[in-house]
Structure formats: C-alpha cells, structure tokens
Amino acid sequence: MATGMPECSPALLVAAGLAVLAICSYLAAIVVGRGAARYPPVAGTVFHQVYHLRRLHDYYTDLFREHATFRLLAPGRRQIYTSDTAVVEYILRTNFANYGKGASNYDKTSDLFGDGIFTADGDKWRQHRKIASYDFSARALRDFSGGVFNRDAAKLAHIVSGNAAAKQPMDFQDLLMKATMDSIFTIAVGVDLDTLSGSEEGSRFAAALDDASEFTLLRFVNAFWKVSRFLNVGAEAALRRRIEVVDKFMYKRIRARAEEISDGDIGKAHDTVSKDDLLSRFIQATTSDAGEVDYKHLRDMILNIVMAGKDPTAGALAWFLYMMCKHPEVQEKISEEAADAGEATSSIDDFSRSLTEEALNKMHYLHAALTETLRLYPSLPLVSPSIYLESTAHSKLAGIP
Ligand code: HEM
Image (cartoon, rainbow, N blue to C red; front, side, top):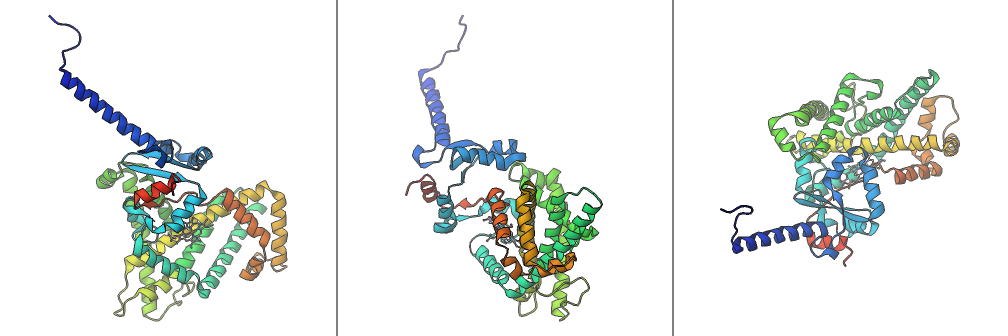
C-alpha cells in the first residue's frame, strides 16, 4: 500500500519545471521589460487607475514625482506615461507620424464622436485640422466669437452680481460650464442654447452631451463595455439614450441651417444669431455641386469642436477664479488692469462690450495669471496617442538614441 505523494515520471517533472520557468520568464519580461534598459520602469497597473479614479490626476502626479517616464501594466497592451518634455517633443513634433489616436480609441469613442477631429487619424485628421485652422484664423469668425464671449460674460456677470446682492450661494463651476457651453455652441452652430437662463431644450441637450461623454470615458476602465453594449444594459444603455437626444437635436439644427442656406434665408430665422458660425461655413464648404449635404459629416465636425472647446475653457476659468480667491492681491491688480483697459461705466453690458480684442491684448497681467493657472491646473492634463511602430518609440522613450 502506498501513501502520500502519487508517483510521477521524471519526464513529467522536467516538463512541468520547464513550463514553470517559461511562465516566470514571461512574467519577468512583462514587469522588467525585454532587455530591461529599453523600457521605462513599471509604476503600477491600469487597475490602480480604477482605484484612484476620483483622484486620477493626483495619482499621476505622485507617480511622475518618482519617474519622469513610467509604465502601467495592462492586459493585452503596454501603456507608457511621460512628463519628460524631450519625449513629449519627440512624440508631438519630431516623430509625429508614428503616433495617432489608434483603433482602440476609435472603437471606444466613435459612437459619440463619429469621425470627427477627436477620433480621426492620418489623412482624415489632416483634413479636419486644415478646415478647423483655416476657419479659426478667419477674421469674421474671430470677430463673431469675440462678440459671443462678450455677450455671455455679461450675462454671467448679471447672474453673479444678482446672487451676490441677494447673498445667494452659487455653484460657480456649474455657471461657468453653462456659460462656455452657450458661447461655444453659438460660435459652432449659430444658435444660443441659453442654458445659463435654464432653457429647457438647450439644457436637455447639454445634459445629454455631458452624460454621453462621461459614459464614453467609462469605456476606458470597463473591460466588459462591449458586452454591456450588446446587451444594451447599464451605462451602455444610458449612453445610447443620451446619444439619441444629442443626435436628434444636432440633426434638427443642421437641417434647419442647410435649408436656410439653400433658400438664401441665412440669418433670417428667429433663433439664428449670425451666418458667421462654423456650421454655416462648413455647410457652404462641403455641400456638393448637386446640393447634397453630408449631415453625418457635419454632425461629427461640429460636435467634436463643441466638446473640444467647452470643458477645457470652463475648467480653466473655474481654476482661475479659485486662484483669485486664494490670492486677493492678484485679483486686485487684475481688476485695476481691467478698469484701465475698458470703458469707465457702471453698466455691466457696456463695460463688457468695451473689452474688445485690442483692450484684452493690453492686459498682460491677466494673461500671465491665466497662463500660470493653466500651468498649475492644466485643463487637459493627459493626452494619449498610440504608437504605430513600437521599436522606434520604445527606444526613444527609454532614452536610447
Ligand atoms: C483653456 C482652454 C483650452 C485648453 C487648455 C485646450 C487644450 C487642448 C489640448 C491640450 C489639446 C490637445 C489634445 C490632444 O492632443 O489629444 C486640444 C485639442 C483641441 N482643442 Fe483645445 N483647448 C482649449 C480650448 C479650446 C477651444 C475654445 C476650442 C474650440 C472652440 C478648442 C478646440 C480644440 C480642438 C478642435 C482640438 C483637437 C485638435 C486636433 O486633434 O488636432 N480648444 N485642446
């Protein structure tokens, strides 16, 4: 009778030993990196990001204090993070063609962003970029945007001064989100959403867009989002409903504007602010000779610009006001500078109108305070290009020429 361990053949033991060794060396290669010197150090895993979701930027800052460039382990892919300006320059300038948004990013973001500038790569992206930079540098658009920002700044100042007089507490970030949404949407579509005054349709659209971008972001930390999308449950079901609201509103606006342009009625509709908005310019530039309008293309272009413009601007302003509260002496200097640059008047509207582009260009102290705020609290602290040709990129990231 035998007891204890069952008998094993020597061949089986050798095979099992070799298998364990292979697994260990594979894991070591992932953690240390094949040819250790060529890979930045591992600082954590992508699962730490989920754990630190509510303090993600502080988490990255802590890691960057330890390493200028590091890796986070992720199943199926490698993620390299860098705050090294030489590497950033290499990615965004010297070797730009080797980086892009990538297929995985497109997969997650295209339900909401379609084929806009945020998701496009290569020639498609270049096309978007060319159109956007051409239009944004146009004098007419710049004058139009200046007027829109002036209008909404005055509206915001009225609300704030009313609340202050009534000693009514207010959520400043929320007000700034509404004001920038109204401004950017007017510049992009030529229609005032008027979320600042609580317009029902505008507020429903703005809330759906904010929710949709949050649910889209969740896909980056939920490995099972495709299953949820297939089953149409949870955040994915909510995302689908929000996108329906967004699309219905966008297509309605685009159709109305395209009809105005084709009827030669631009600017006559009661809710159209001007013909200098981006949508009007894009419709005129992209409508075929046969009069065909590519509604989906226009929807993607405009929605991407609205998303790109509103949150970073509102975030920057919210941090700026936070900094002004912390530094009253800076606040005082900016207020003196504004009084010198603008018209001496007790009317909020007149004062806002007097702050023209020329007047703003004289406000160097304000400019310095805003750029310092952006340095300390960047609105977009993380951008995430994908690498096309790994070997070149990894060599450079590890500091190998
Ligand atoms: C304080 C305000 C802003 C900050 C800090 C900011 C910052 C940035 C950053 C860092 C990127 C690069 C993202 C990347 O490489 O993935 C970006 C892209 C972009 N931003 Fe802004 N932005 C601001 C305001 C605006 C406004 C007002 C608009 C337009 C209305 C705008 C339109 C865009 C567009 C279209 C892109 C995509 C460019 C591309 O992919 O080629 N941004 N912004």
